[in-house]
Image (tube, rainbow, N blue to C red):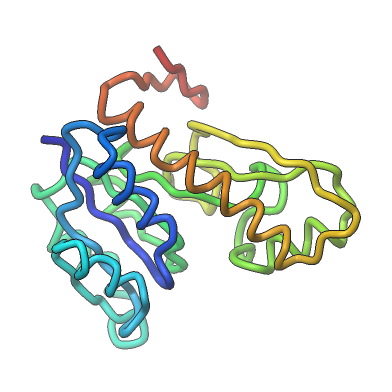
Length: 203
C-alpha cells in the first residue's frame, strides 16, 4: 500500500479530491494515513474525520520555528509521500532532505509565473488579473529548498476571461487543481516518474 500524508491549512478541497479519487478507484493501492493541519479547527480536519482518517494539529503559532521538526519526527518512516494541499507554512531543510523527491505541492498558477514568497491563495489570482495574462492554471511540483522552485510534475491550463474577478478565477483554477493533484499522486504511486536534473519524465 502506498501511504500518504496530506498537509492542510484550510478547507481541504484538494484533500477531498484525493479522498474521492481513492474511493473511486482512480488511485489504486493508495491510502491517506494522516491529515496534518498547521491550524486548529479548519474544515479540512472535519473532512478527514468524516472519512476515518487520523488527524494531527501542529499549530504554527505555537511551534513557530519548530513546526517542520515536529512534523518530521511524527511522519518519519510512516509514509511514502507528503502532499501539501493548501498548506501555507514553509517546510524547512530537515524534512525536505529526509523526504527528498517525496514531497509535492500544488500551486494555483503556472510556475514560474506568479509564485514564490508571499504568493498564495487569492493573492496569486489578484496578481494574474492585474497583470492581464490570457492563461493561468495550476502546477504540481516537487518541494525543494526554495519556494515554488522544485521540479514541475504537471501543469493544467485555463483561459483567463476579461470578466473574471480574482475569486471567480480562483474557483476556475481550483477545478484544475482537483484533477492535477490526484493525477500527480497516481504517477508517483505507480513509479512512473523519473527526475533528470530539473526535468520530470513520465513513463
